[in-house]
Image (cartoon, rainbow, N blue to C red; front, side):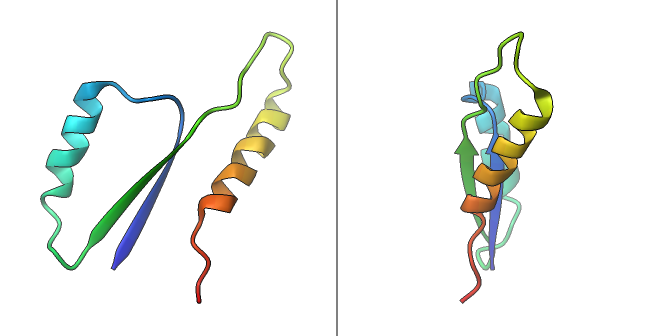
Length: 68
């Protein structure tokens, strides 16, 4: 089984990566985890939040594996 984790944001701190690696060790060999990071859209004081959310959701949808 393949589990895909899609994360929006910038590069996580080292402690987050270490914690994730430790947590993933608890899964058996029959489960594979794929972590994909999507950079968050650049936000400014004039950004429209609903547009940023729409942009993030499109990026996430493009990363979701299609069933064959």
